Length: 312
Image (tube, rainbow, N blue to C red; front, side):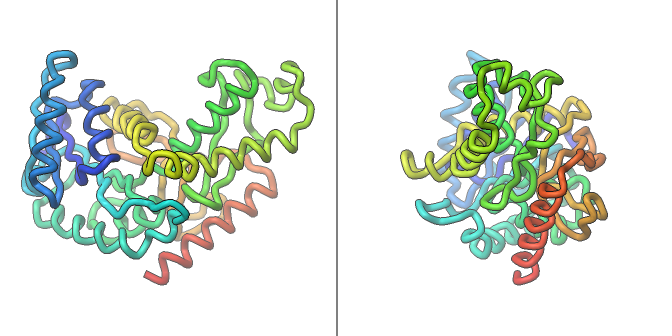
């Protein structure tokens, strides 16, 4: 029987431990098991996070095995090789697909039947691997996608316009990586078209501003990795937001890695697109309006990811 208040975090590196810490702070779950090849590392993280429970909400946090994940509502996979300076997310695919398949095999043996959230990179391709190999219903297997990229876009637009980024409505779609697409055609600030709002704030060089902001979003991870070696706080908060949408059955629309079957005239591909998220995972892909150029770039992104997946 699935325990809707239990989560398993698989992989206790920078990302996994940051996810565990963030989930503890928000009190979404009453039980969390940390799983890692390095059992001592998992135990240390569980102890360290548990010592702060006095300042949060009661929760049972412990290091365990895949058998302990059997009844978890959500299993979050963060395990994988680290992205190195100068290395693209796609360079990681062969190494991390092997690691992921070994994890999926262990989850199968345990009888896990909850929701599988893939965070390891390259997330879109690894989510496709998980959808094919996990044995779970496709909608219950999805990736963190471009949820963080979209947050970065909204943050940078908010900074550019000197407004609260929560009033900015825009998406990054496609690959979580080098071929990602900023959807400028439907972007707005509290219902006001983006270009109109920019001019209200004294900005008229739209093409150059969009190009610069889009490049900054795409290169954010590389810039952070160059400075501190890894990114983990932002993605941890994105994972918490995704889990919140599932646990509370919010029907929130988030750009997660989801399987496409004809949407945007793309078939048999998994990439990041706005999707309705609830207690059963991805309920529906949202066919947002795109310009002709954005559709072309999205299909290019899909074809590229499909080609890499086919090579696996």
